[in-house]
Length: 588
Ligand code: ATP
Image (tube, rainbow, N blue to C red):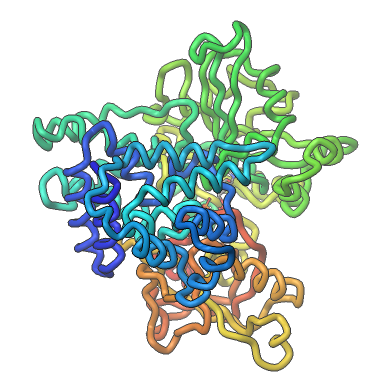
């Protein structure tokens, strides 16, 4: 497929706001792409040159793109900036300039793969002189492009593709390609949850689609977890009491402490398989949002190399700081400091971490996710030792409410958040929130049973006291997976400290977009002065949830306040379905 053809599809996608139309356009695009290039097509629709969990970044600022444009089209310094300032869109500026020079490049034969490889080269050039190198590659690419292709090529390195859909819509596009229905999406989603590489999934389907839908579905059913690709973490339901826990677990369950650190998935691959030096291994760590965070945890990497004697393994757990003198776990705020990007070495000495492992998902070529909890737990115990840095979570099997209450209070006394109950025969439901895991937290004593994670969708300029921050109130919403849209739950104008307002203004700055994103479902009365793309996630506490006709989620937060900013994907905010469940729980 030529990149020009792909750019025509991008233009169609950009023009429509109907989700069904997008699904249909995507399915045509996927059907037209060859199996050998469809992975690249999928990554490019997301403005990327790798799956979302790969840390491949372009490292280009707007200014660098503008210089590449000036070089590509031989216009004087400042000319591109001038055009960009006029229309506010780098892509349009690129198209304008290209139109003047490359208007006649009507049938541009450059393929998707060729453009993809050049973009990848930009992302991979680092070190001394890399700024000039990146600009050089991009200007070469722009020079050889037709105007429409130039528009999208200029947007990709600065993460400005914004076609208005996320992974779920891509899966629907693939489903539609199979039989013109969205009916195959659940099957696709099930594999996406254990291997969230859309390019890979698309390739599997595309390779056999000519043999029919049955064949395509069979090919994705074979997809298993692999080391080096994070699984979507499993999540827990909420219980209102120990009796509630027993009722939902068949009267007997495992209880583990709920530690409040950073959800971390540990992947180890032994030398034999990756052709590394014999006896060595590669360790990777992933966050809850599937980000590769290996660089942040040199101490856990070293511990994994030393303490775990197996070949290939994927473990799920929580990394938490502890006081080396007392051995006590530290509050979340101290653990989270590890997230800063500098001085990691000295930080790992001052605030060392432990990885508390509560699950084993894959071991030496065998997926364990469909095994019962007890089997997976046994593997955790075989692999790890209590006294090590990477250690198994404490665990008790119970069948009595009083016992659960006791363990809950013991956890609180240790400054922990509460407990997690696990169904003994429960499988690991990647990416899902189910009753196989149940959380029971301290905060459940208040009327609103839990905090809500919501994405900041936009804000209004401040008046009075807060005008100095530039933000007076902000709109937050939660994700509706079925509709691939964000629905509002509150416009918040109080409950933040001055520092938090400042931080919101600073974080919001880089996220502003000129129009309301297409997948924002907002009532007219809730419009914002500035719209933000979905990125910034906060955890909010409120007195209760109330029914609301003004908010598109149907429920709203009463007296909301910010607890903390969260490292979560916007699609991982409290779902609309969970909001309903929390609403019911607060009435209990
Ligand atoms: P969720 O993860 O349920 O979407 P959340 O991010 O707000 O919600 P919590 O409500 O605090 O998190 O509870 C679930 C989280 O608890 C897990 O994602 C995990 O990070 C953490 N956790 C701590 N201890 C355990 C444990 N023993 N078993 C499973 N998860 C645990």
